[in-house]
Image (cartoon, rainbow, N blue to C red; front, side):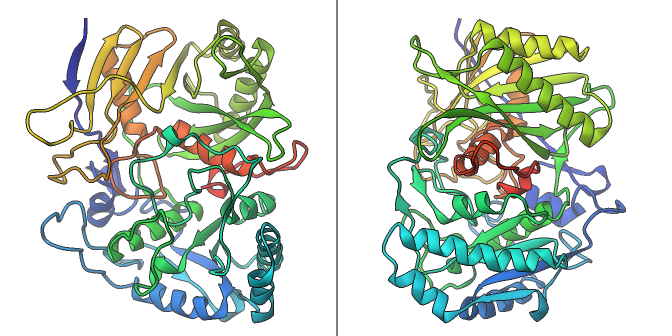
Length: 484
């Protein structure tokens, strides 16, 4: 029997164990979740790389962001709040430190070489030029994060061999900063990050339109208000520097949980289909990346799948990464996958959990779009958190939609529910969906409360966009911060 319910908006935890549903209000009122912790980044050493004329403007804007930036307007104060400024006594309670010594300017000669090269040579040349400057700065080991201003001369071009995320995986509205494009492009973001995955320092790529009002965003990107742009950039830098902006709520009675997302990608030359897994460690959101073995396209459903041995090996590898990070094993595993589970896959994952004496393994196929739709009286879209139970193993969850806290629907397109299809229902649908809804908020590239996909699969999609350009034998970074 079909039924529906509206879930409460999940709260997040901030400084002093305080709670709020919106990351920006939580940070403004209480500070980040690791406020007062000894290893929280109180100062973030930022290396700057890019064209000289861009770096001057970027540094001026970062200096401006030390002070509050006014809210966009008064009509939707919760949707567009002010940015409190970035300093040790407010907001994230940190400060950005940059200097001429930690700045590498791309020469005019190199920029002309990029501009005059034909495609795809311009893309290859740009990545090589930037990678050399970034390596030089990173090797000096004086910075925590690298902020890279991309060349305006470069236009990302379509690659016939690239296999990017499906159209259905896109969010209704694009996030800003260095989110990889959703279309199947060979692009500067993915290629540069793939080239530099061996570095200790994560990279944040930024466009001129982020800090300069006079510069129009590229086609497909919408202009956010200045305060929102400041929020998104500074939270991303804080996370990449090792900070914990916010975390999931966790009761002392809750089992220690390891969240795992499994997705598949093709190599850039299209010759092989491999697996990538983004493992998001417990409520802190510490991400560790694990590459798996080859997958095969099923003749039955035309989806990629693992044989039992490879599914077992993938989860064993992920649990090993969890133990190395936390020096203990989880009591519970939540595993999300972008395709249906075969009996072989479910059996292989269960074998791994049993082998490591983990009693609770919850597996769900998360679809990016569900055929069912809900409607409200009037013209407003369904509320975020609307859950439609279509059957024991088929749920439709609106992770985007109208939001009472914002008093509006903040999207550009009609929201679509995501599908949740548990392999073996072990909890009631409401509990299962509430956890997925909470996981949609663990996204440090944007600071609104409404992500569309749970972090388990959002991270996996970002990771595969970069790994498709990495040879199987290339050593790659294990921290998720290097891919976002």
